[in-house]
Image (cartoon, rainbow, N blue to C red):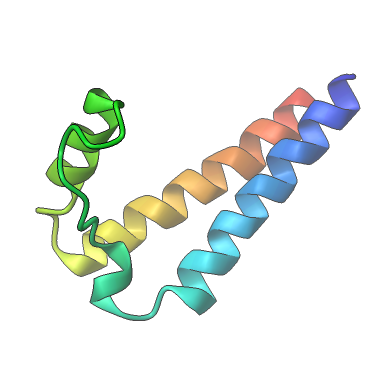
Length: 78
């Protein structure tokens, strides 16, 4: 079970890194256009609105750091 969980975390982190490096090339890809309170997850939507105020290079760096963190966590779990 531990190997499965580690592999899933590594794949998830790899997908996040791939998307942030190759797929999310425009500033518009990092902006959330939804209204706060529309999905029912108020905390998550508030966090996304706060992160939208970051400059584009910093937002891209945060996404790449999250992807790298998932890969490192998966390697540590395994």
